Length: 264
Ligand SMILES: Nc1ncnc2c1ncn2[C@@H]1O[C@H](COP(=O)(O)OP(=O)(O)OP(=O)(O)O)[C@@H](O)[C@H]1O
Ligand SMILES: [Mg+2]
Image (cartoon, rainbow, N blue to C red):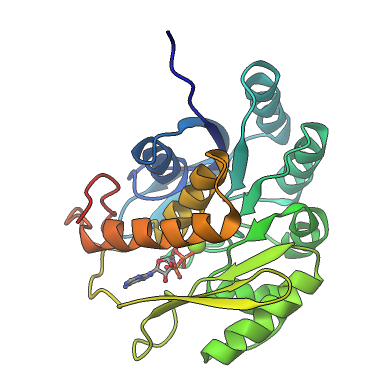
């Protein structure tokens, strides 16, 4: 008898170095025992040091991939990563409505770890078209600052930013603290629209953090696809990302990738 498996969809860019983007998402889905589907938005020429070129796919082709997977297979949850430009943002927003995707994790990817823009001049349309569709949005510190117009230096600032982002329409907000000052442990803030939760773990000393954000949001998507509630999904995802960073791989000359397949 064939096995029943949950289905998770990622809508994101390709990272040729395998550390972030679609590649990190599919590894995460596989490690967590869900079936991974993908809609590619862009192809990047990238390694652990830099993003040297970006080729955004035509938005019609993004839509066609969506139609292909959704009309045949469907998904139990989805995540959005790099959306590149206004036309792709609009196409993805239409498809989310068309296929009534409710378990939607939105990672508001704006820049690569090396500082290259991955959402060209599209923040306003992203806020209007995508944020209100998110079950949960997972900004890092810089993205939370841009979305909320709150300057973040403390945990309390992260909470204020989370409230503002919630008021833009996202049902729930998870602000990631990987980029907080090093004196803080790795602290993330979860705001469910009413109350706050802090998810804290010891900061791991490593330069190999390529793809942490992609991996975290893909893990949340995987746990939601399996039917877990949001709070448990976030706690499990925090454990997963912490293990993946702790066992990260020495590869390349810059920010090396995580290890999605080893539990400590
Ligand atoms: N050095 C670290 N030690 C432990 N946890 C970390 C570390 N760096 C990041 N994290 C955790 O990894 C997760 C991702 O957070 P981060 O702020 O790095 O996302 P991001 O900036 O979107 O990543 P990316 O640059 O890959 O897009 C969070 O749960 C964060 O707390
Ligand atoms: Mg990120």
